[in-house]
Image (tube, rainbow, N blue to C red; front, side, top):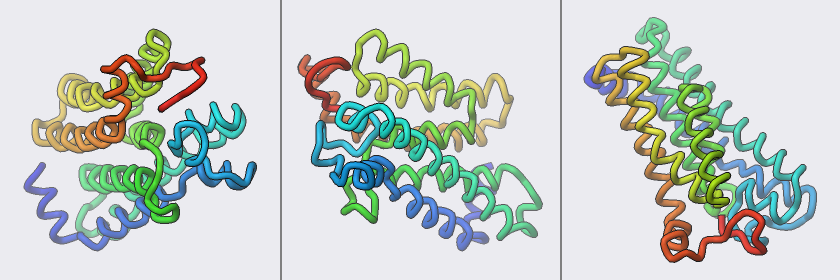
Length: 234
């Protein structure tokens, strides 16, 4: 599959660039920032932990704004992945012949750039969130089984340790593992197909972990804030 992907990229690069660009611009729409500015005329990055994410919105502004933020972040990544797949399919119909492996390339690429847009939003001075919900939305389209398992790991870790950051890191770590297991043993995909999917999810995992390095340092030092505490660094 990998050699076919390279050939596909060389022949169909305009659709891939368009998919990546549209996904980045869509990802740059940060729900936390928009919601807090519209409802409270404040910038969420100036409140609480300073992170432009749903957890900080929940602690700083309440449940309803956090719910809207969550739906917005999930929705934009879902839309980005679907648009990426559609662009690749429609712009290269003669080349791909409806082959889903090429559409998968467009979806993964769009998902990655949507997350990058969330982390470094063009519209908000490149200061965004940490990409957890954007990653979840992406994986709900690409492989809902993996997405739900990662969500389960996140919930279990948060319930036990009461640290959203630790749950996010653990979910990121198991993402490529679950992807590889399902691709190999459940879907019986070829080794090259599995390698592609695992590689792409490794990129996602790396981005999530890198954005949580300050949290990881506090977890190791025993100073990371927990749900229910007066201060939250997630």
